[in-house]
Length: 376
Ligand SMILES: [Fe+2]
Image (cartoon, rainbow, N blue to C red; front, side):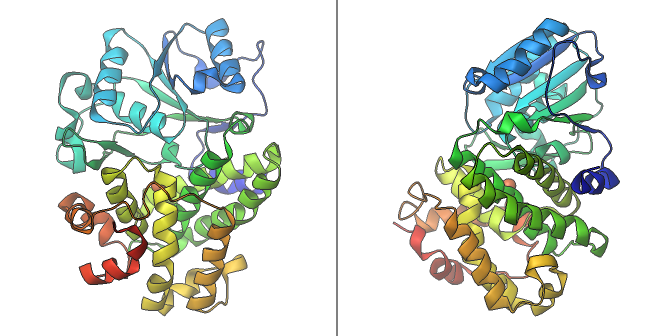
């Protein structure tokens, strides 16, 4: 069996890794009477996604709803939740990237069909019970949202916030590597870097537990080699498989520890602009990795494989070079951000759990210098 698959199975045994979807194949995870599938309008036009939708429609009692593409907001969660609970569905399928997975994760909570979803953000209020089963079919390899309890979305105040609840999770996951082969290059890069960052932030987190050292290092090593290989050949299904399993591991890693400073920066940038999450995370990682490592040299002992036995400066330099080779376009944020507005959101109470989860705690003036390229 695939080594990564085996490693992920140690943590989660609720996933299938399938090469293809064929019409006469019945999938055990789909044994439900009434299914609703949530996807997005752009995705449903992609041939490989269309193939999955057709399979579901031809073989199961499935309603399909298509949301407009874009980062999740309160309205998308509430309206999707109303759709889910209008009829008696017994399975909700999320077919899409991190945004769709995040939306469906929360929309599957009955309360969100009748109540303001913002009441539940920042864990202010808890959900009472799960009334429907959920299945994630990720079409990107990145967020690992299928293995976290978190939804990131924009509130009524247009601030990026999170919902975390014991009850918001996926019962089942199906990985189809062929689904991710149609992704545009920039989405492959942004989501892959996000997954890498989840693993490294988890490894360097204050909440890190050494029993997950292999999970983080193996996941990082996988993405470290597989993502550049995919940029050479986007159709390499072996690497697509590695990326999906690596991002599932990344989701599991942040489920244990939460994220850190890069995500605090990324959520702040996501509140102020329409920058894709993975691009904002890449920016945060590029500029914080050196001070984070220099600030606590003990962290270096947590790194294995290609990251082992390096000084803080060398390790940071390697990571920065790896990121530079991705040729990420930062036009949406560079020289576009008002420093005072950034600080206001960065220091919001709801960002505290990320802000405090890294050993390095920059002051306002440190941030001004560190992220100098952002300010307008
Ligand atoms: Fe992320």
